[in-house]
Length: 287
Image (cartoon, rainbow, N blue to C red; front, side):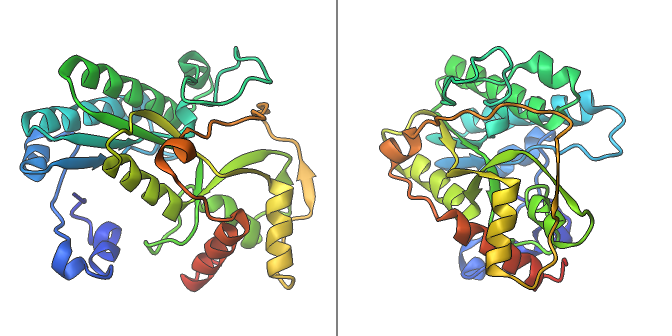
């Protein structure tokens, strides 16, 4: 399914094999009839859509939270009515990693949940929407006997299909476009977009797949990211001044490898992912 905005979904029609194997249907997460029409007859569903708050959001409780929860439940209701065999849902590491009550040396694994009170108090609406939406999905699927598998990616980088940057690629773009001479003294878990796509396929095709799967390759500091780009592109002007972040959270030292051990996912080297991100941003004229 896609929106009726050709600027948002036109690139999908240009994918190799799309003419023969891809059908785009107009869908609205808040319109159950549109979901039922699209899902009817499907044996599997990948639920990836989630509202992302804009800087102009005036009521994030409605624009983000209620839409994230209600939209997810509408998808699952349509799946139940159509007797879908398996649903693979895209959540986020954001639904796992933000728990200030957890010991600093505790590993990050599939048992971890972000603290909803902390996210709400700090206006982290996207992260809260992901957390509440996933919890609602588990509650509904368990009560209704649905086979649900959830992928929780970290920061997703790599080549872009669409013409405009998304929130993830902006992390790299801001290092390239001269918008700032500084970078934060912080770390981020990185994963390649192709690996995330493969993780979803493995979760659907592997009969024994179950529960949540953290999908993150490697922790990279902003300084390390800049050094990788500088090594690959020595002529680029990159930020040189490190500043402390406004909110400092300790990064776990150990991370679950369930997705590798159970699904056999193989990760792309981080250097390759960063290079492909830069090349894609450059190809699309974004810096």
